[in-house]
Image (tube, rainbow, N blue to C red; front, side, top):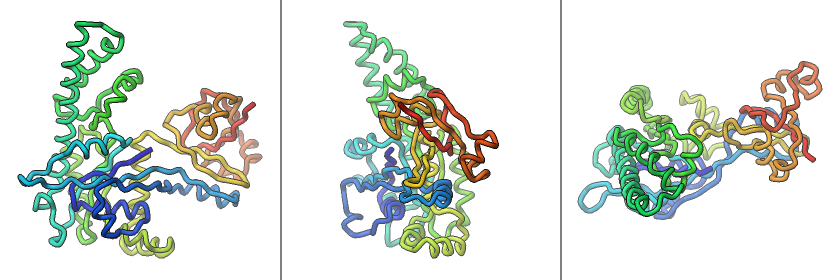
Length: 360
């Protein structure tokens, strides 16, 4: 799964990317006009606990790909414009994290001169809505012309669906709020609408303005209560410095600053949630691993995430939830307590399940 970092120039996107991916900020990185990419481990204290209990040869975290998309710049007429190149880079992501600047720094000017987080959020939301509205209108026009010549199954499916989307987006609401069934999602999958993507708003505060964070977040939540946004406050410069420290020093530093969890944890956890993902575990002396599946994935689908052969040759899954395993301390004791069980292929795997797959 791929998370795209977007935002205006000088919003702190690349600093956040460097903190999340533990890479150095270099002049070359900051000046790069193409994408910066990196795969990051998703922190999971449950996996750490299981690793401590089993002491395996190997520990494997779930991963996400983070993509730093070049910041939007001001054109010659003084306006920030979304280019086709920017749109093409955004469309390939499964979810988007819009980095919004709150910090003041005269040495790093804001593209719009003044710092105004609400204006910046509104700008991108409006541009994305206009982009999708134009796509829908153009497609509807073509469908209505083509259907006069040939009433194919595809056109018959698309016509009512695109009309439904048009009515929705004309209310200035993003497509991510429109209820679509699985068949409807398949019909429009290739169009890559921007407002259908899960969106996280990351507010980049300066360290001396953290007292303002609650008030600003409440204001954003009130204004965009119907837009299905997730908001994560962070301090990009602080997080970057934190990422350069050993774990014990970083924890002590966070405690002094009054932060209980790093931005990495909060952003990746939020990304997991908006993407509808969850983790299950496999454990043993050789390896403890977190696997990523969609919420409500079946036991057979989860087995297929481990190995494609396991899907076809699935027989049963031995299941114990993480909380139960930690509580009782071993598989035999879980069996005695009745929390270990065998499940069939239609079992819906829960976040935190420990699975052992039986296959032919």
